[in-house]
Amino acid sequence: MTTQSSGVRRIVSAFKAGFAAVTGSVSAPASRHRRRVALTEQHRLHFDLLCKAMDDPALTAVLDTYETEIPLEKQRQFLFANALYINALHFHRIGAMSRGELYGHLRVMGQNQVFREYWEATRHHRKSLPVTSEEYALGLMMDDLIQELTDSDSDEWWVVGEPPDEPE
Image 1 (cartoon, one colour):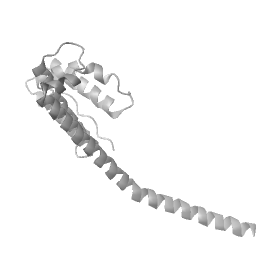
Image 2 (cartoon, one colour):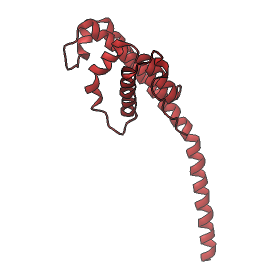
Image 3 (tube, helix red, strand yellow):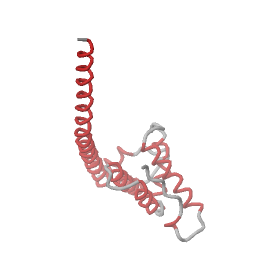
C-alpha cells in the first residue's frame, strides 16, 4: 500500500508540475502583452502631459526642476527632447526596438546640441534611479555615447561608439 501511495503521489506530483509548466507558458505571453499595453498607456499619458506643458507656459513652469535658471523657450525644447528620448525608450521596452537599434537612435539624438544641453540639465534627475534599473543602465549608455561623440574628432559620427551586445 505504501508503494502504491508513493506511486500515486509521484504521478500527481508530475501532473501538477506539468500543469504548472503549461499554465505558466500560456500565461507568460499574456503577461508580456498586459505589460506592453500598460507601458503604451503610460507612454501615451506622459506624451499628452508633455504636449500640454509645451503648449502652455504656466504648465511648463510645473516641470521646471532644473538646478539652474533655464529660459522658457529652452525649457520647452527640453520637454520635446525628453519626449523624443522617452519615445525611443518606450519602443525598446515594448520590444519594438532592440538595444542596438535604440543605441543608433540615441546616437542621432546625441548629435543635437539642444538634446545634449537637455541631457546635461537633467543629469541630477537620473541620480534618483535605482542602479539596478534598466533606465539607469540606458542612461549610462547615453552618458558614454555623448562623451564619445564629444571626444571624437571624426566627421563620421554614425560610427562613433560601440553598440551594445544584444542579450541572447
